[in-house]
Image 1: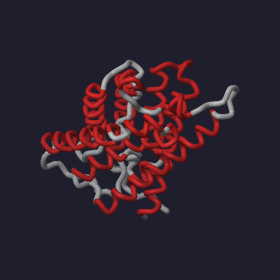
Image 2 (image 1 turned 45 degrees about the vertical axis):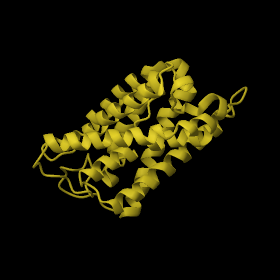
Image 3 (image 1 turned 90 degrees about the vertical axis):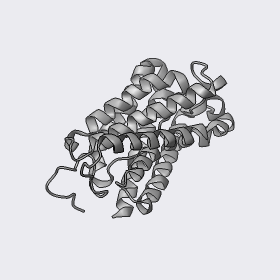
Length: 248
């Protein structure tokens, strides 16, 4: 069961990275920031219903961390999720790089970034470290709090994928000009592995800040939803109110 859930997380993260980062790298000039934001949001929304019934569709180590802090998943379950998410993201970025490298003139991840997150000289808007740090903490808190609240028993969990996908779109609209938007360590690791150099040097922020944001979101959720019935870790965001479990 845990292996199947891990595979679902890898597939979901693959789709998120390939769809979101792929849009930024391949079609960013054509669709703009709005198009890239929608690509990330729609990827998450689609995966919420595609793999959500299997794994809960975390597809983000920060989300898994927030759920761990709220005791909706155990550490023994969280670790395989984290591994699967990173693998799925790295594989997606690798395939994306292979595709764009075939275009006329080629593509060099080290100089062009492959959608890597960055601050200072590597920020799209020239934002410094402090701005990127604050943005990542706040925006990740938005995402993780929405996941926790939308999948709580007192919410209509069958529709949880909709607000979660929408908030990720909103997050990217705000965050892309600042640092290309991470709020997801697996997404940041995936690009940085191939971009190397400065991307790996700045990667720490896009791991630490989302985890801090997730912790803040978990604390806020605990305060607002104190005493609410929690969802069993085996149940997903979109299958939480279904009468019969997923077969297989």
